[in-house]
Amino acid sequence: MTRFDDRGLGLLFIRVMLGVVFLFHGAQKLFGWFGGHGIEGTAGFFEQLGIPFPTLSVVAAGGAEFFGGLALLLGLGARGAAAILAFTMLVASFTAHSGFGAAGGGMEYPLTLAIVSLGLALTGPGRLTIAAARACCRTRAVGPAATSRT
Image (cartoon, rainbow, N blue to C red; front, side, top):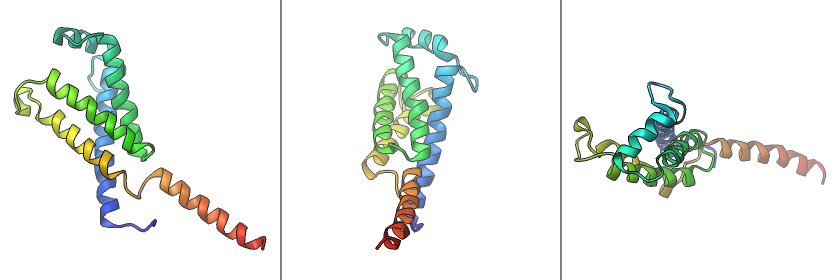
């Protein structure tokens, strides 16, 4: 159950890359890091797009991206986080982007993130997660103790 296999390694690569991308974009929206505009600047952009409650929407989207990205990286609550991120990126695809091509500001990139996130939500995070490592360590710690008492 804890052996490294191609599927687990593939899902780890997907989770780590998605996690980094979402952490990066969430930090831009929430904290203004990495050249982002922070909550106030992003809320102004959301308001121009006609998104209702722009400040609340920025906090919701940025929080989903930042904390969802962290969850993907660690593999803790990854299915739920991936589902929320898929929804967030679908909304972004159809509100903040027009056309398809990424070079022209189209929905290609956020739609790709949405579909990959949805796939991860459906398949799960794989075996190589913090939760799996903790369970493995707990099982090993409990195993010998349980046999020494009998």
